[in-house]
Image: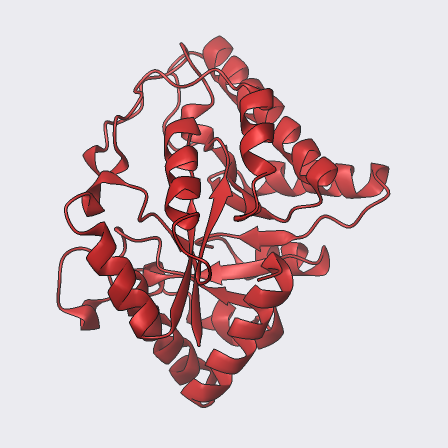
Length: 278
């Protein structure tokens, strides 16, 4: 069994053939966690998961690019559905109700993203503070609901680490989760690992040189993912990514670490089952 720990089959890229894609995924013994990015896609992830007794799960959360209404207009992404370009006001009660549903296994993807930001210093400060505020509220929800977190971070690792360190030092529980689509430095990866987090690798490893980080990251702290429909591995030979292509991530990790494909499958699958309780 393989587990794609971060997919977006809840996006409109699959609206014409979703059932076929999931049928093919499960037939190849691949399980999948569909991850929300705002309320619309979070609800859709849950709706999809509830159609299957096993093998399809959901994570729900407000992605940082959607967490700053009125402060920045993010790029429209037609793959995501009815994209809200001006952001979404975070309604914690709506997300809390979704999170209580049986097929929800994580809060995510949540975090910080400073890639697109306002131009003025005052607006940048408000932009960052709003993202942090929404992120912390979602961390607290994860604690309340005893769910792991799926963390998104772009151009903000030091501030994300600072928030996580603070929460871990002031709360009486051990926050669990994964740093999705990791693209930082080894020093940053080690900080996350030391805090108990997993490192998620996907098709970005074919675009960026992350070989040394993969070598140094213990296999017991790695999760594999696709982030489909994005970041398609070259070997897939198609444009749109799918959960079944997680095998190419596993193959690449095995080559970099000079271990067997089967060993990577065994450990990363166990890691995913342990973290998400599936």
